[in-house]
Length: 90
Image (tube, rainbow, N blue to C red; front, side, top):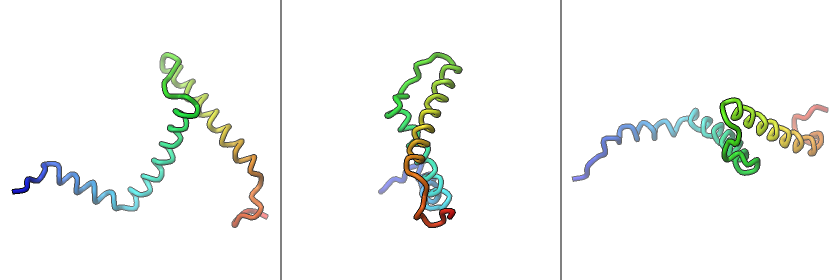
């Protein structure tokens, strides 16, 4: 006799949710956020907080966010204006 897990109903619900369009969108959005945190941890070395207290953590994350935004801005401005892209203003 094959015994069914007591959690099988919950697994079936999770499988049904995984097939929805909202779940697909959520996964896409989550990937973007997770990549930003991975970048903070690996490139900007924010693997641990070095300042103490809530204000120290807030300051560290603020500085890391500023650095990340400046890198993104530098990357976007170095590409130049989008001349030959579809939908670009003339």
